[in-house]
Amino acid sequence: MTAQALQDAPFRLSSAPTPVELVAKYFRVLGDPTRLRILELVEDQELSVGEIVGRVGLAQSHVSNHLACLRWCGFVETRREHRTVFYRVADERVARVIAMARGLLENNAEHVAACRRIEEAGC
Image 1 (cartoon, rainbow, N blue to C red):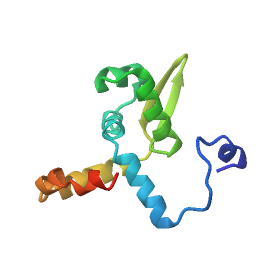
Image 2: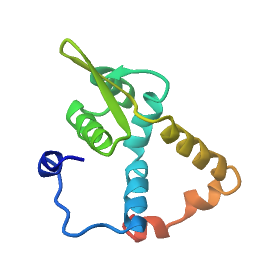
Image 3: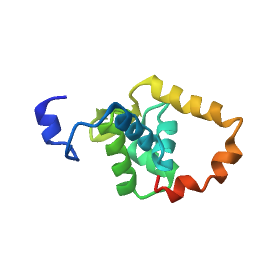
C-alpha cells in the first residue's frame, strides 16, 4: 500500500496491529450481516449499487458505507461503466471462507444462535 493510500485511509493506525488483531478485524468485516449479505450477492456476479440496494433493502447511503468498507479491506473490487459502478468479490477465497463457516455451522448452529456472550461482549 502506498504512503498516499494510507494517508487517504478512513482510519489512523495508532500502532501496528498484531497478526491476531488483523485476523480479528478480518472476521469483524465478515461478522456484519449486511456486509455478509452483500458478499453473497456479488459472489458469482457483478451488481451495481442500485441492484445491491434493491436486494438488501437498505438505504443507498448505508449500502454505500458497507461497500466502501468492503472495498477498502479488499473484499470487493469495482468496475466502472459510464457512471455506474459494479461490484464483485475480489478474491474467490472470500467465498470459500464463507462456505467453510456454513459447513462448520452444520453441527452447532443452535449453540451459535443461542450464544448470548457474543452480544454481551460487544462483538
